Image: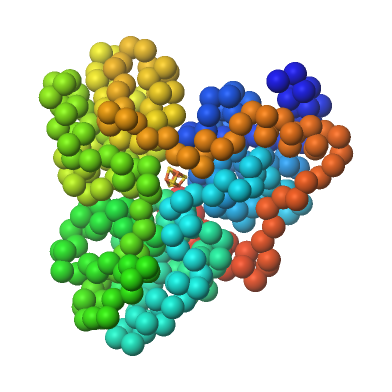
Length: 342
Ligand code: SF4
């Protein structure tokens, strides 16, 4: 801790440390900013720091690198920390799906939309086809934008977020088809009819919440308000009182009156931190055994120390690097999102 403190002080404003809400407290304690993936990437792009240290998972550091200023370098303290949701779509299976769907659809009519939880190569595929990225807070606005431009949308990779957003748009079930990349369908007719094609991927953390959890928490805490993330199953979202992105969950708790009680369906480190930040409110995890994101948990204060000490000693470890042929279209998809969601 002493080495970390000294390195941090020596680096001063040359380094910006960002921590996602799901990081451990021992990491969050050293952050200049704590936020969700997009908030942090935008913070990084606004900063004049030479080095951006992103305590989060791979796609977040890639997004920060895509939006970074020229000359800024982005580091992930644990380069192997990936997002299990982002791993569920890779460029090869996406290309194969696009080709197969082309047997029954005019692919010029399909606008691809990539959730921010995707690798840069996937964002690049989407960007090359005039597509756009979205976050959980902008998904509804982005899907409306997409449908105003083309009659069909391919949304990837979180089908729960897709289904929950489709419900807000009032899209009937028969207009939605789900593409399972592990088991591509023999019968393509549902895709030929669908307005919205969803990639079958899901966040293993948010999938842990079940309708039974909502029923139990209401039984045990009458009057509790249930607030869940839109990556939760639609059956859970349907029974919740409110649904909102990570940033909205944080804001909702700030605005809530003293004495109110909340059961939160999202990653447990954020829920525990919200409970500590709002001692005048009751903040409960929605599930009996609340889920932690396993890859967010990988980063420890000692990883941050190792990286900052190396930077303070004048060594420059390998940062996030993206080839320009990937970075350019991926950035275009992100910038479209920023323009639409601003
Ligand atoms: S909570 Fe889910 S979506 Fe977020 S980083 Fe972990 S696995 Fe990925």
